[in-house]
Amino acid sequence: MFEEIRVTKALNKIKATRRHTLPYSWDLNIYRGCEHGCNYCYAMYSHGYLEKEEKCSDAEEEGSDFFRKIHIKTNIAEALDKQLGAHSWKKEVINIGGVCDSYQPAEAKYGLMRKVLALMIEHKNPIIISTKSDLILRDYDLLEELAELTYVNVAVTVTTMDEKLSSLLEPLASPLEKRFSVLRAFKDTAVVTGLHMMPILPFLTDSPQNLERILSLAAKCEVDYALPGILYFRGETRKHFFDFLELNFPELVYPYRKLYAKGGAYITYQAELYGVLNSLMGKYHLSGGTT
Image (cartoon, rainbow, N blue to C red; front, side):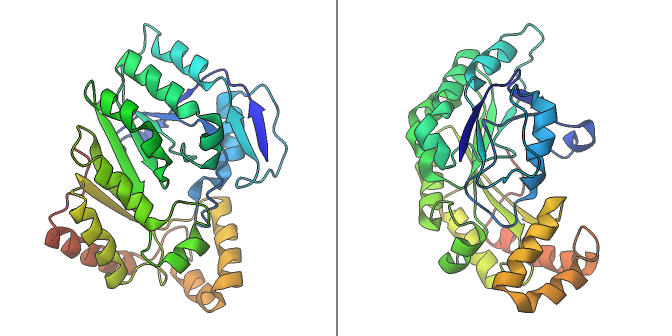
């Protein structure tokens, strides 16, 4: 279900408590809600949160479905142009789609990203985009042009190389090969490319074999960096993910409850996992940070 809304601002300032860990201070989300349907999505909380942050003219119903009720910010380009053109704007890096994937299926219909990228070119503003969709290749020309003017970072998220598991975890995201095709396409441009292996799901995607397959393919795509990150439960995500486990992997419910007695996995598990990851990153000569 698509619902068209209007916003008073396009950019949202990242909270100061999070900015020291991120290479950007501003978020731009063209949509609210995401059709990809990733069952581990940390952003399910955002329907209510963004309602307050963006001061949308249309009030949102309580309990709206993050995966099925997609809000289209039809005037996002006008709102963005106003903010980028303000004297106070300092051309800071903008993270596009930090909450909702900008290249989810709705974008094929609305095409708002082309307007947004045209404005970024006009204002020579640096950006970061993370996606699970090869629809981004539709805008290859604009991203290549922008990268000749300023910093452009395109990252692709891959959690597993098991197609069957991927179809359960992230049902409407692009097939895995198409995601890697995005990294290959930008390999010889000025665009900085990255592989986001987030989240790593204990007992599902954390095997050394899966991690190595992903990182080895990332290395073949000559990515500039790779960022792994373990699953962390936030807000509604915990309940939704446990419901997903009950339906698809009931044998993992108890191990997850034990491992995630609190919001994050046990320290000992994390230490072992990142030990494996560090070894693989070294093996494939992958940097762990953006350039």
